[in-house]
Image 1 (cartoon, one colour):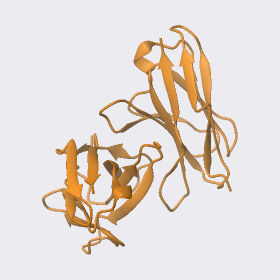
Image 2 (tube, chains in turn cyan, red; image 1 turned 180 degrees about the vertical axis):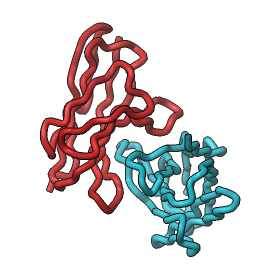
Image 3 (cartoon, helix red, strand yellow; image 1 turned 90 degrees about the vertical axis):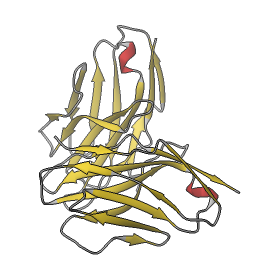
Length: 114
Length: 111
C-alpha cells in the first residue's frame, strides 16, 4: 500500500516570505502522480500543483513550485511571496498512474502572519 | 456549469438513523468518488465508481453503501449511523484524462 507522510503538522510564515512544506511517500510503483491540495476554511479542496513521476523537471504554478526527488521519495512544496490568502491546510497526495483514487497525507496547517 | 454539488451541507443524526448523501456532477465525468475527512487526517476513500454501473470499495467502506444512479449521480448511504461516522464527507469526480474535482463537502454529526 502507498503511504504519504507530512511531518509538519503546522507551519508559520510571514507575508512576502518563502515557506517550504515537506512530504515523503512510499511506493513500489515507478509511474505515478503527486499532488498538493489546498483546503481553506471553506473546506473546498483546491488543486495547487501536480507532478508526473516520469518528468524530471519540477512543476511550477506561479508562486508555487515543487522539489521532486524521486529516488528519495520526497515531494516538497515551496510557496514564494506568501500572501494572507495562502493560509490553509495543505495536503500532499499520491495516485498511481493506473489508479483511480488519491492517497492523502494528514496535512500541514499553514499560518501566514502580516 | 455547477461542477460537483453535494446535498445536504450539514446534517445531524441520532445513532441508528439512516440517511443518504447526494452527489451530482455536470462535467460528464466517468469516475466518481466518496471520501471522508476526520480531524487531523487527510481524506480517506470510502467507495468509488469508475464508470456508470460499477462501484468498488475503498479504504474505509464498512457501514456504507453506494449507488451510481446514472453518469451524473453517485449517492452514499448510511443504513444505521454510528458516532464513528461523524465526519466531513467529500464527493469528487474525474475525467478520463485529468484530476479530481471535489464538491464542497457535507458535515455529518452522529449523536
